[in-house]
Image (cartoon, rainbow, N blue to C red):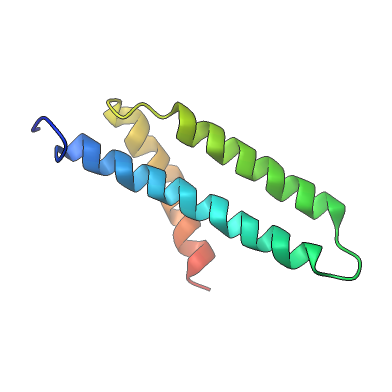
Amino acid sequence: MGTGLFDRTGVRYEVAVDVLGALISHHAEGIAIEEEKDQPDRGLIEAAEGLQRELRDIRDDLDADDATAIEAVIAKYAPQARAAFNK
């Protein structure tokens, strides 16, 4: 693999971060929709907020040089992001 800004690991890192960001955004939208209801489900909101925290922690802890961890994030979360946005 190359070195520098455009090496494969760097690009895949950006993909992983984008996937996690998309899921965080998806949960934010769900929270907003639930909060607009006359009787919002606090349990649902709290669960979504917990998922957002978990995803942010994963994103913040992801090492841009750890190709194995990057690929694991993409493998686990990309299908979830695809499903969330392809409804």
